[in-house]
Image (cartoon, rainbow, N blue to C red; front, side):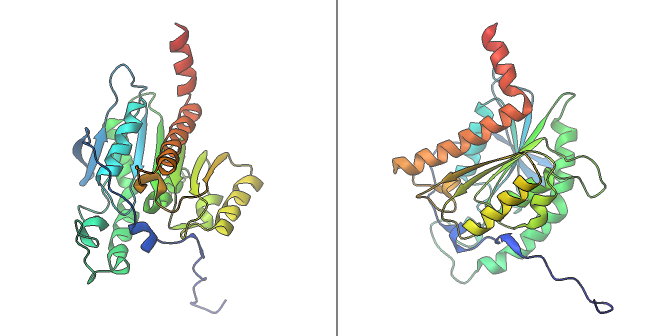
Length: 279
């Protein structure tokens, strides 16, 4: 390598968010969580009912739509399963549905390519501190942590399942992502905690070849994982499906159920539920 030259940038395995990430349906419903500020970043907090609370926390990393109805309702559903769910607004109140799409009024003068870089930079620089601050503010002795990310949020899940830059243990005990973006090979090779992959058979950002390569990396290194793969749906299915189409609704619901079940079994929540049922 010539003096002063830099190694080539690793290729993407899951591509950066693209036009396919802007499609989908906005769901109806009234989110029940509350908003807080953690590490100077707006944060959504959805809590379980006391009788269902398991004492553990899910960190939520949103797709490019950020804090929109669909995502907030997903967090509420995870809270219904017993978790305190805490989501980060790394778009600082400028999600793509406002900045690029408008509210049912597209803004063609703006482009996703122009919108993404500043938000990627902010998220990369601030998510680790936000995770630490969430733990300090909401965590207790015995709290275990899971994390979930959709599209844009996938690399932050992978980072939470790998050792920190200082060499400390991974911040989370288990993680999941659906229709991921922005992933490179190191996101899979560095994993030290179980990963759940919820994927669409047809996905521009995470192609069949890329998905197979990721699974090969995990399998050959004997890393714990589970792949959930749906035919007949595309990128965004787990958040922005058409609820009026029964199969699309089912895929969305099975994705969420699979993620929560995987968290339950890896955090020991399943055992706790069995014990309660036996009392």
